[in-house]
Image (cartoon, rainbow, N blue to C red; front, top):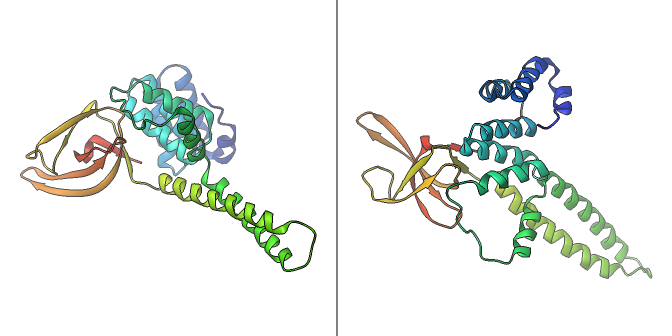
Length: 246
């Protein structure tokens, strides 16, 4: 369990609910703990530690999909938190579907993971500082000086470009339309209806991105379908009530 001291300071009017949630968790009453944590969320309290603890509760209950869902929500708010990243990757390793996403060497994958774990707020601040320094160097270059300004201008420009690229990638990731499968199994079809061909099945905890949405009229009412893409590039349609949107 992560310490909720900072959260306690910010939501002192809800400390009773928070204390109950923590106590239920420590007593192994995970469903009661989930109810209390989700009550805090309905009250408008958004904090990565609450999401992290919800992920822990669902993992203890064996609900991989919900665990991954809440770990990912926590990661969006604190992408560089080691506990969140460790638990998320651990639960991912226990999924029934563990498709190979990349054949690149491990050091390249580790490098990509490092850059994509950087917080967008930190990257924004870093880009602002680099831009400010770059402007100073450009101004200095207008005057005669022995300081090798041009070399620094080039170096700062390259670093600023890299930081901006990483920021854009991470910003798109944070704001991308992602879903996590919470049912034990789901059928992926070639179109937005059960009349279409079954392409393949996926299992609880699979992470997907939404490409399209359609609402289909049926005799019993309406069905909402999502066109999704998997990490390995496979695409298809799935019932929306099988997943949770991030």
